[in-house]
Length: 398
Image (cartoon, rainbow, N blue to C red; front, side, top):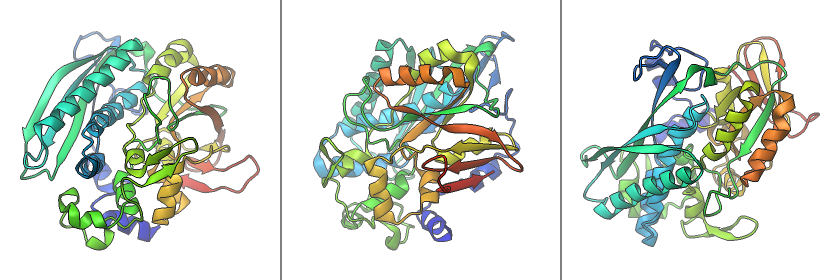
């Protein structure tokens, strides 16, 4: 584990972001500290029965991967998926609090003009508008309020793409993660093809891409694209893998280039969560977006004396297996860095579980009961098994 953490550190990244959490430790946690996002009073409307959520996030280092693929293949359309990555990292976090409609967004794009053309900016904007249109077709209102595009080549090596999102909702509709013993855990798959998606999704999302990019892709790219990584990174940690971007991988029903699998746009669950939340809100104890921290993320929202038992972990999608084999990363670290096929967890009353599973399936997204929450002694824990009676694959503790 120490060696794996050292590898991340050498690449200028951190799986647990200890320094960031230390820096923000004294900040106000909002009206409901256990909620997935910070909940603010209704500053926008001044109504004590309402509240506001403002959220910001980016596509992270996935932009560097898009840059590589674009330069190698000439396929400029991959940038549209980057806009979706940055959007979903905001919107699906907010959905965990019950904010699923009437959302304002604003973009922030910082580019190195020497390398990122105006045509790329157009693709990023078009990707944003395409996503908004698809959501509108599903009855979800997202309004683009503009944004900032800055030429910052002195500080950005290629491009950074982010969004800020704002929502206002009635406090009675909030979900603030009051997870109790007996809660059934439903997992929504990150891979496959939802009926609101246009192509197969590998499930990669927008987390762990620094590891995936360097552990999977061939060292050839280090010499050809030095602008795609930090010059302070030791070359021993840069692009150590066996794969080239256009190498094909069998995903069971078709062969897809490795680069496209790594660039699969982050799936949004908004079309599923909107009807789930509206119909089953009283039965929902919590919703966790398994992004940074992946399966261990739930520990931030579960009280001491509870253990989250994941007794039926689903089959790992092809891409995550490929990453593990290329990197030699332990299972404990894989389930902490990557979503491993489940990027959204719902903690619900048992009597509503089957209906939620059926609703997800109607959208073409696999859903399964992963396990349940049980009483235990000591700090909150997550225990992952492949079956009820099997030995734990992984265990995390708060």
